[in-house]
Image 1 (cartoon, helix red, strand yellow):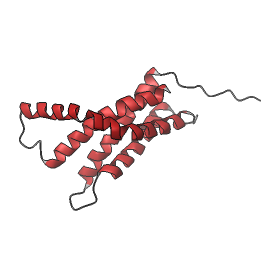
Image 2: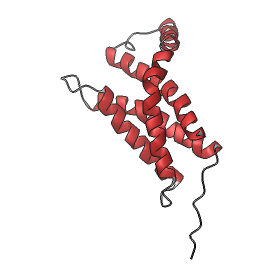
Image 3: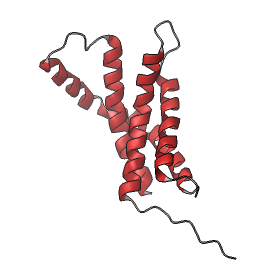
Amino acid sequence: MKRYFVFALLGPFVGGFLLLLTTTYQSGYWTQTNLGEVGKLFAVFFKTLQYSYLFGFLPSLMIGAVDDILVHVRRIGPVLRMLMVGVFAFILASLTYSSRGPDSGAVQFILYGLVGFVPAVASSWLVHKYIQEPQPAAAST
């Protein structure tokens, strides 16, 4: 249960911020900016944080479920599990957010993929580091 709480709490927060950074980069917002514009970015982030949680809650729980499933596979270590969860979230986020039009490309695919990769790996690492993971049962002979 704690695993899902970490994914639901951290995923939309970090993913929403990265999505805002990606969309502002894609729109050309960062070409000529100053410190005041960065302040506006954070203001927009905190004003739209409720929507990040509204639309990011269920996808974060789904990624948490994938992480929970992979915990029970004995041959998968924590680092490989974090990488697998991150790659899965990368693919889902890039397919969800990136467009297929004339402005699509590798940069757009990677930036939108990182929106899923970074929160998934960070959440999986926090769960591994600070929450007791279930131990596999000993095989009886």
